[in-house]
Length: 323
Ligand SMILES: [Zn+2]
Image 1 (cartoon, protein in one colour):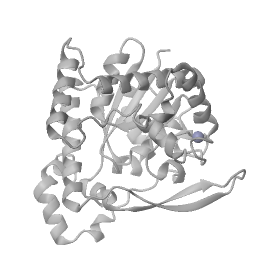
Image 2 (tube, helix red, strand yellow; image 1 turned 90 degrees about the vertical axis):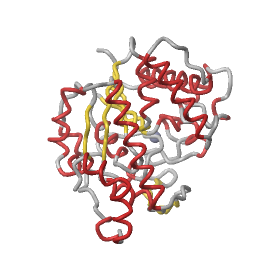
Image 3 (cartoon, helix red, strand yellow; image 1 turned 180 degrees about the vertical axis):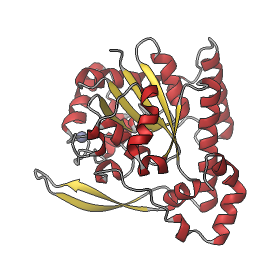
Image 4 (tube, protein in one colour; image 1 turned 180 degrees about the horizontal axis):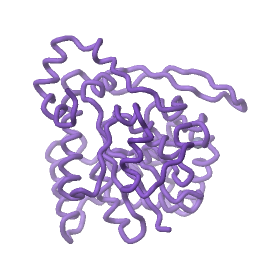
């Protein structure tokens, strides 16, 4: 059977982590989480979804040893080794445009890709996919790194070897913005040598105001839709987070043909398998089942917030079917 990678593409806080964990609960799927942050999270010793720090996690600590043996350089020293959103020109719109043009030329023709650093990161990601496929029994990897350019780039590089599928996940912009603005979250962490879980509170490092959060939702969704429409035509699927939370089985069955994965009841129980997801939000650990989507924005948004949202992103939100 040809190996497969399912990419989940979305704005952050759209429910990609839970969708990843749900798909990864299938007997033939393995959840990677936000694998583009692999070394960054490893260096920080972030909590793996199995409940312990990544450096203590039996799966990733072993994987890092294997990788370091084969690489000449110590990957642990480079937090951006897998990050395709690399630091070159960070903050510079001009460089970001150059990167996009570079990618478009590369993807649509036979032009070489110019940004060496990004190409290296892509090769590192491919190396890691191969290593994971070697170590796990599952034939399908779920990657919720969310970045559309990265997913298309990797698909092109992997074409002969691995089949790639793309899920575009959308969530009501008002709920997403509300979630982006939430700064505090709780995480269940396993205590040393024990199965007991302890609740710890973390603060998000990202400071963002309402207007920027709305802009981010609009910009990223537009980019994903445009690039998938142009490069994938109808060969991708769209899921609404709210539909998935309300009825995961029907939502999955609508896309199961496209994914080439059949429904299993075990997917509804997110605790049955031990997952080793990298990065993502607290639900990588906390989520035990699919819960109804939260609509806190209906009470937390002021009239002014709603007006501001509708003016900037209302049209796109309506196009996704949100009234
Ligand atoms: Zn783990």
